[in-house]
Length: 82
Image 1: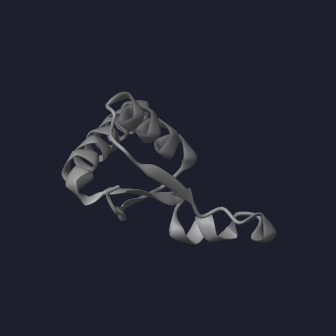
Image 2: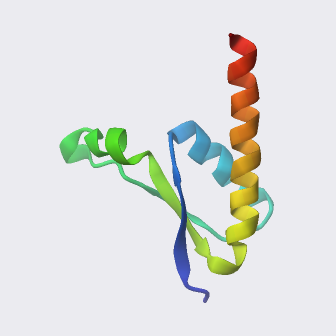
């Protein structure tokens, strides 16, 4: 089995869920790691981001490209609300 490495940090649970769905649909192996710690009521997520994604290094470029497309889409939606 391929070694999983940290690919990128995710900002929020919506972004994580959407990226998880897309990667699953495309058959890209990955794991979502949340930084949530119930003992501290999620305070680390405010400072470090929601969590990160791990995957085999060979998928890094594909995952980053998908993430970039999602980020651009979010920015377009935010700009349309102003």
